[in-house]
Length: 498
Image (cartoon, rainbow, N blue to C red; front, side):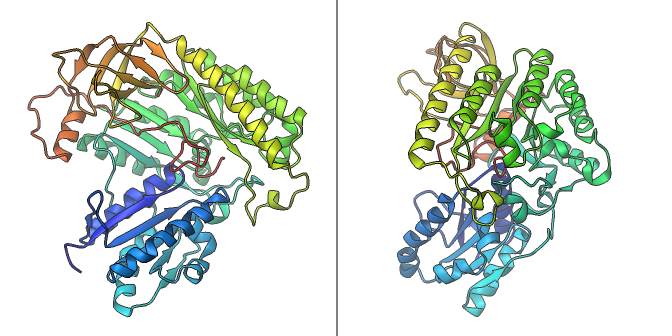
């Protein structure tokens, strides 16, 4: 296999897919491929797909169609399709797009290099879909996107039976990693310069069910708090059914667990929640929010909401708006219901007309934007410590604006005064918030304090820059989470709207 062959991985869907794509990149580099430079044609293009919304199918086949003439001009090029849509469609992908070389599923991502080589030698498409997990993703090589942040998978699969979600049938039943293996991975990451980790699971706070410990997740959070050099811990996505008081206590009492929670609501109507088979009701959800706010008054709580589920009435939708007003989410990731063949909801009566769904969706977005703005305005005038991130959102060259994340995960664009030293991604700065918008904050008061960290050193090393010597023994880092589009790639939330 030529050392000069290049690859590109295109990721759609949730953080689980982002994490899997880091593993796919690691596998390809371990096999001798190099990441393709921007604006070049890669020898291997891998699509890591999502199957949550109907648009996913159209998106994949549209992108594959765009690549066909590119491949015709480059005969040695290979195209591979993996992820949830590949697990669902299997050989249908090659039938509809015969120029695809490899199709692999969610359970056998480790097979990708071998399948590519077999397809290249035998000059025919290879479709291999495993029915159960072959290797836990964290045991595979990785090329992480961030030098100072990491996703850490604590479980895969899901035992829930939500009527709108196809993912459990594609990812399988929940499988949990042993706590010692998770903590060993986190410690190894800290040694490499990573200091913020996000614990990942399809239903992250159900962790421990596989080995019979209902408090395993809160114990894991507390254990992360004992890892020296790890300053920020997050997790996504929890299910309200499994959100117990011991988890809230662990969040509040463990200093490096951030005051931020993403907990999917899906609907504020108890009737719709029952039809969704969500196993909690409005009162239960709001009770969790109240307990979190009591334990952590400044916590930012975000959520996922589906509009237009079959049978949703105007009264049901008003219940959703009621919960949004009561919970005062910092952010909501909103989705118009998308029918997925193979799910119970796909055959339910009471389809909501598209124009009604669109109108309700806009009302929800308008309300949440208003609340987000009001909540963000409360922070104007406060000093916050930001973890400097790589490019997030728009920057102003005139103001030399950079971006960072506050402990509660709010996005802050901050400016440098003349003569200020420029921080690196992974460093931390203290700034005063001067302006609020619904989806970001601005700090144009200059940098009040800068901590150059070994996390920043790790970023320098990855980018081929001279590494500062004798930096403080402080590590910080975090994955980026931004405002999603209506059909997001790598959006916040679970692998489905769990």
